[in-house]
Length: 192
Image (cartoon, rainbow, N blue to C red; front, side, top):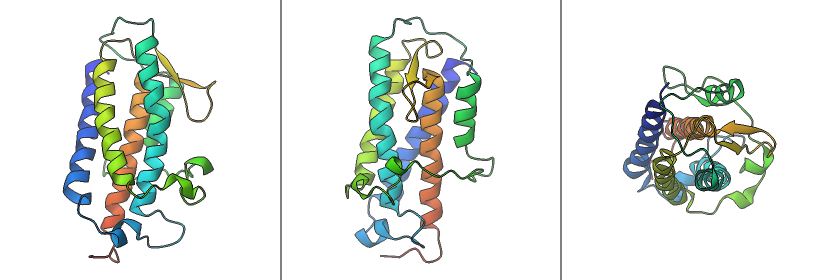
């Protein structure tokens, strides 16, 4: 893919996330954002608390790498590394917007095990993170997203190309937005 295609895809998904928040989540009650069909599933607040924890890790890593990288010449084409492609492909939704593979979140990113992740205004925090991500993507257009690398949340020693890391985070966000949509379309989701 080209770098322009990567940025277009990333920005489009992020803008769609913001649109969903504005149109579908802005007027929900406390009962609705905390509702879940079972103890093992996440509520809307838990979904967004999880996403916020990832953003709190990756956004500073992106910003730091963009400002400090010596790779200042953007490339027209972007080629994923095998590890990077595997990472973001695993997060990507299926053609029918279905979640193809389920993953268990690491305990420190899982709001069921780590209640401190939930702040109460997690949806608004996520909205701000999405706006910030658009700014980060714009600033990344001035660097080589194939040569610059960032650490992963799994290990600071495992690094992804900046472009691969963007796709991983973007598709991870999209995956959980779909989870939120699925939760809201549940037959028992509260009307108030």
